[in-house]
Image (cartoon, rainbow, N blue to C red; front, side, top):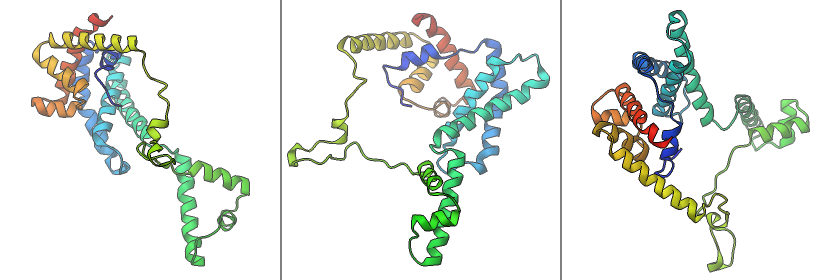
Length: 249
C-alpha cells in the first residue's frame, strides 16, 4: 500500500502504541522474527519479498506483546512464535491470488495437458483432457474457472476509436473516489498540521517519522541510515507516535 502525505495522519491515529514494558518485551523478542523468516526461507515462493515478510512478522510480534500477559512465562515464548509465523503466513496468502486447492488443481491440469500433448503430438482438446481427468463437463468447467489465470491490461492502452478520438482505459474509468473541493482543502490543512507537529519533534523522532511515512522507507532501511538496530528504530517510532497522538485526538 502506498502511503501519501494526505493519509499519513490516518496511520498515525490508527497506530497502537506500545507501553514501556511492552517495548522492552518487543526488543527482547525482536530477533525471533528474523529467526522464523530464515527458517521459512527455503519454502517461500519466488515472488516473496523477505523485507515485507519480516515487517509482517514484526507486526505479529507487536500484536503478541499487546495481547498476552508476559507473567505467563511458560506460554509466552510459544505464543510469540505462533503470532509471528501467523502474520508472515497471512502476508504470503495476501500475495497469492489463487487458493491452495485451486493451485493444486492448476498443477494437476497442466500435468495432464502436457502428458496428452506428448502422447498425441498436438494440443489436446478439452474433451480429451476432461476424459483423462475422469470428470464431467460441469466439473471440468468449474476447474477451469477456479484455475483461470489473471490477465493484466495497462491503463495506458487505447480503446478502439477513430484516430484522434481514441482514449485510454484510464480515461474511460469514472473516478468514484474523487474528492469534493472542501474535502481537498480539509486534507491539505490536516497535512500541514501534521507536518507542523512532526517538525516540532526531537530530531531523531522527526527523521524516523518522515522517513517511514513520507519517504516510504522500510524500518530496516531507516535502521541502516541511522546506524542503529531495527528494534531501536521501532522504539523511536513508538515514542514519536506517543508524542503525536494527543495532538490528533
